[in-house]
Image 1 (cartoon, rainbow, N blue to C red):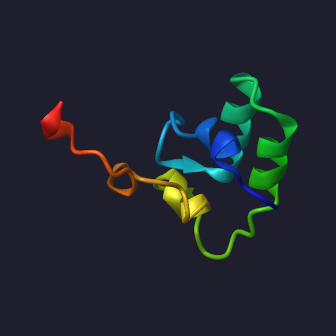
Image 2 (cartoon, helix red, strand yellow):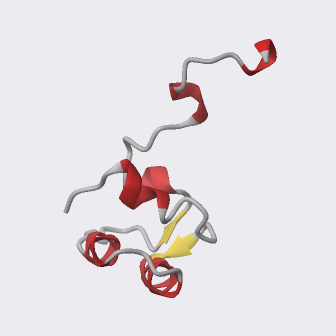
Length: 74
């Protein structure tokens, strides 16, 4: 399983919180690449039934804080 920013972006607008099956259904309905569906299927469900955000699936997903511009300047 590997995530890239492009692949993860297909799930950024998913209806969070969501279960693994709901994320797979969302990815298929929105026409995400097959790699996205395969990555979701490869997630090992430990004790977590519901995912609150993309960060729980891919912890390296960039947040607004990762960008270096100051919105107040513009």
